[in-house]
Amino acid sequence: MSGRPPVGHAPTVFTTILTTLALTASVLDPVGSPTAVDAAAVDSIVERYREEVALPGAAVAVTRGDTVVHAAGYGRTPGGDAITERTTLAVASVSKSFTALAVLQLAERGRIGLDDPVQAHLPEFTMADPRAGAITVRQLLDQTSGMSDTTSTPFSGPAVHTLREAVASMREAGLADAPGSTWRYHNPNFQVAARLVEVVSGVPFAEYLRRNVFDPLGMTGSGTGDTERDLPPSARGHVRVLGVPLAVPEPPAFGNGSGGVLSTARDMAAWLIAQNNGGRGANGTSIATPDGIAATHTPSGAAKSYGLGWFVGTTASGAPLVHHSGDLFTSTAYQALLPASGHGVAVMANTGLQHGDAQAIAERLIAAIEGREPPPAGDPWPAVVDAVLLGAAVVVGVATWRGARRSRRWATRRRSAPWAVVRLVPLALPLLLLVTVHRVVGFLYRGRDVSWRQVPYLYPTFVVLLAVAAVGCAAVLVARAAAVVRAARRPVDGAAR
Image (cartoon, rainbow, N blue to C red; front, side):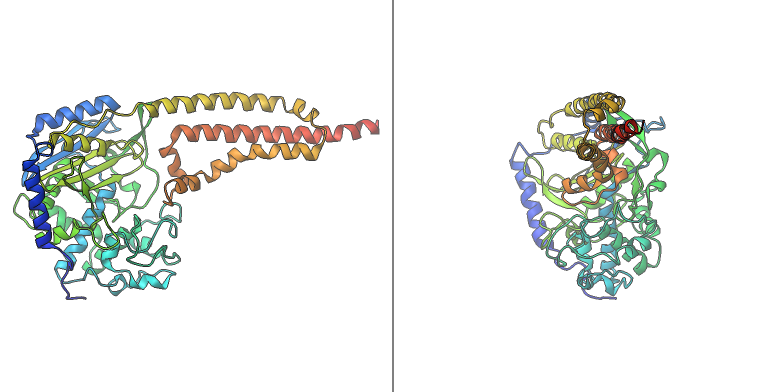
């Protein structure tokens, strides 16, 4: 165990100066100055947004300083239950800030050092690349470990069910970069960090969070799970097709440490207060020091806009913003801290990542806090695209049906069997694309790992079109190939007579 200062590089004085300057600027600049956003204003913003985009349900928390401005639920779960401030929903990758805090607590207690090699405290963490021995605890939390979806496949690889299995699954993986040299968003960084918490603390990660974060802050409705099977009915969500939300189960994936926290609007309000109050909750309980909290909100090295489990940037008006989104395939979440005004915003929505509803609501709330006009209403084009793709699927289905029926005529006109076979090859392309579409999507997502089962959640109507084309073309291919064989045999049979 390391006894070195737990949060090296925590720029306490520097951070304080920046926050003071930002607060002064917000007071002097009327465009960025905070306005009196109350419960009624929050309700109005959320309900108007829900009406514009047909959002089934959401939960929202807005805080300022150590005060809860409003915590409420809106709409219903897929099961029809009303969402309230105590309804449990998924926060997805917002969980990374909880994992980072858990590691920070161990550092502040002298159990680890943020700049210690991970293997010094977690010997089971090994990789095929010997450079993995140089990965530090900090590099896990600021996503500069060198691990990447391009060398490790957390979604399309073999299924894992526990943090121990998640770490073990990395043994054959390599590194994409030297540790500390490049920032790459990679969920297993935080799965390793959560397993580190388990091993160093001696208790399961879920129990550690309960004892050291949730209970001290009064977050009685919060917990964490391993896979989609741990989602309660209230935390399940929807995808939209033709603008209509459809309740669907979350696709299989492991997410503890990187995306497994479940919480409520009431509990997220308590979390925001602690983050904006130097680690001290509204009840006076401290879960971390002000220096520790400042360290998690501060980028360093290659992580130019990422702290420890938090992104760092600015709002549309230029004010400091500490934030993180969370995306599942059937729900989203978003949290934001506004250091200049002391506000905190958390949103959970029960629609999937292709819609981005949680962040869209949060951006409207932040605009209201800063006295700006809200962003424009929801985009109508996705529903139009859905209609076009489904219409194309019908056309393709009819065309392939006709093609299969006319296969004999097609074969008769092409008496050269080898040339006819060559003409059949393009009919296999839609099936090939259907089988490998997750690889294509992963490439479009800049190398992120995507499993095949996740693609229909991202592009449901495109997958319908692709499936219709693949099945239809395969049927035409088989029918034409059989017709070519029959046509090739026919002259021989005639000569025999």
